[in-house]
Image 1 (tube, rainbow, N blue to C red):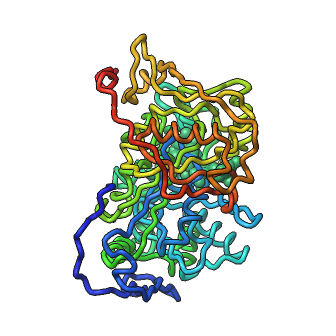
Image 2: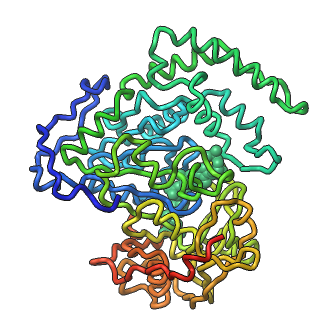
Image 3: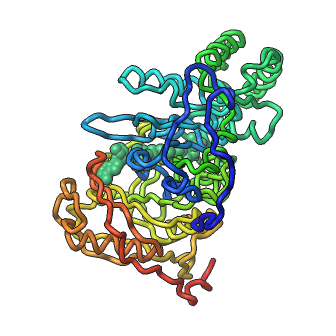
Length: 492
Ligand code: GDP
Ligand code: IMO
Ligand code: MG
């Protein structure tokens, strides 16, 4: 993805991205930019922000900042399992389905067909934003291809308790994500947003409702009370949602392709983190979408050739919420230090996040997987006050030292981290605004991360607010770290 379509200049006519052409109603307006194609850099329109760990890397904060330079912000996978926090001028915003770009004027936010959409959630967010003075009308577009989350999906999530067949808990967010994606892939019991407007909706709804009711009753554990899903009430409720969202729903794939091909700067906002990717993450302790960089094209319909900048977002340490291995977990005073200073409690479920040292084996893997060009190291301030910092540079799995991330969960479960130790710093970083003002040990720490991941660190975050961000000038002198051929062979 890093290589943009250099030299490729499409001679498409400059399109006006006007709403009716894509089926959007109401007063939806498209962004309009009168700058020339040369000025806007026609052949390099896409930037992608992707989390490289297990989610909550502060993608929302970064997207909000980068939105300043983009016209269109795109959410391409996941659903209301995401919780993205943006802090600006003392105000805190928590967003789940609507891209964090919504907080800026003149920006169009697109939720594509790769997302599973809970209408109640999105309406709740629209109301919250409008109630706090943020205009959403005319700025938000929801794909008619997005699959719809129904109450039975949440019920399935609850009944299965997010558990594997072994009974071990994945610890899902309970938002019906897995069951909705399962129906999407299974095809026969799925509804896309566009289906809610069809005259056949009632008939299809009744059929699906019957099947779901039988399934839920059969899979309900004995001790769980009978589920009381009210057919007519749910139908009416979803018809109401469809009406409420009518002006926001339309075709987004052509909209985005037209935008990319005419050089509009696009910003793609990843949800979750690459280690939760259904295909490439720590299966089965993952979410149900492609949350690494590989998901951008499939989820949005915009080919990778239009994405020329991939920013990998990492926390300066590791966190995970829910089940599954976290090799560097510190279930001790260090973990507690990180949890308290980083306020590591889930945005969606308020669960305490599990905390540990930075894992360079895992993030080097996800940097490569996601085609990352540069790194944003977030929450660096949280490490302040620790005498020593550890970075995991390899795993020892059943006596063998490996520096490649294993594909099998049993291997990851047995992985013992091999650490290198760096000196910490006592200073608080939250007021630092220039790289030169960072303590030398903090600079050493981020440079070492860049070196281990083979990518430069271009952005450093020292607090939740927009202002607490350092953009490294001419960023920075981290030479790519070539793989050690001996270690490359030492795979599991
Ligand atoms: P996302 O899901 O990747 O958008 O991340 P979340 O919003 O779920 O979690 C990141 C949390 O860290 C939020 O509460 C942010 O306000 C907060 N945050 C972001 N950047 C920083 C930072 O540099 N330092 C500190 N201490 N907190 C930060
Ligand atoms: P953001 O976008 C952190 C985790 C859940 C669970 C697993 C599967 O805020 O980074 P799901 O409900 O998706 O079926 O749960 O994935 N998970 C997240 N963890 N941040 C997220 O999103 C997450 N979304 C899902 O805790 O372990
Ligand atoms: Mg989050």
